[in-house]
Length: 301
Image 1 (tube, rainbow, N blue to C red):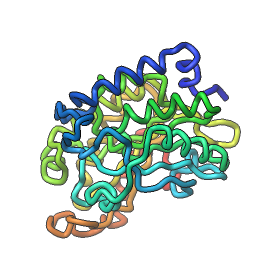
Image 2 (image 1 turned 30 degrees about the vertical axis):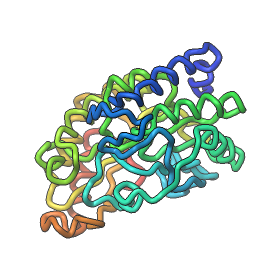
Image 3 (image 1 turned 60 degrees about the vertical axis):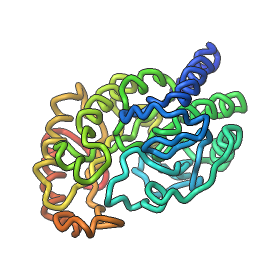
C-alpha cells in the first residue's frame, strides 16, 4: 500500500507552502464558492460562521461509515462545527446550524489526529472540513512531523471550489463528497447555495482527477481514491437518476457510489411538505438499481 502523499509534500517543503498560502486566505476568505471575502482573522464571519481557529464538536473512532472507511478499527472522525451549505434537513443540525462545539488551536487539532491514529483508526476522517481547510492543512503538517501516516479523508457536502481543491492536491488521500442535488431549484429551496449543482459537478471532476477511483488494500481498507455519497430524497427519484447518469458519463472509471436511503425529515424539513417524509423503499431501490445497471457498486445494496 502506498504511503499518504502528504508525507511527500512534507519532505519536499510543499506542504508548508500550501499551508501558508491557505492561511493567508483567511484575511479575505474565498476558500469556498460563497467568496465572502471577510477577514476571519479579525473576527469577521461569512456564511459558514467559521473563525480563525478550528471549531469541532467531537473526535472519536467512528464505526458507521462505509466498510472501506470504517474497517475493523474504525475511522478517526473529527466533526467540524458549522457548514457552508446548511441543508434544512440536516441530521447533524446541532453541529451544522446550531454550531454546538468548541474552538481548539491548530496544535490541538494535530494532537487529536495523532491520538486517533494511536487508537488504531485506519484514517483521519474530516467531517464538514471545507471552511476550516487552511487550519486543517496546518494541523496535518504538525501531525505529519510527529508521525502521522494514515490516509486523510475529506468528508464534505460537495460544495467545493475546484480552485481550492487544486491547491491541496496531494494533501488529501480519499475524497468522500456528497452529491446532493442535480437540479439547482432544489438546492435553492433546501440550502443556502443555489449554485450547488454546478460546483459539486466541477468539484467531483477535480477530486477524481487527483485521486482516481477508490483503491483498497488486501483487507478491503481504502487508502486512496474517490467515494461518492448520494442521499435519496422523497419524491425526487428523477434528480437522483440524473446524478447517477452524470457520474457515469463523467468519470472514466467507476468508483464507489453509496446510494443512501437514510433520509429523515430532521430539523426544518417539516416546514417543506414535499420532503416531510422518508423516501419509500421503491424510490431507493429504483435509484440503487439504476446505479448498478450503470456499473456502480455500493455495499448497502
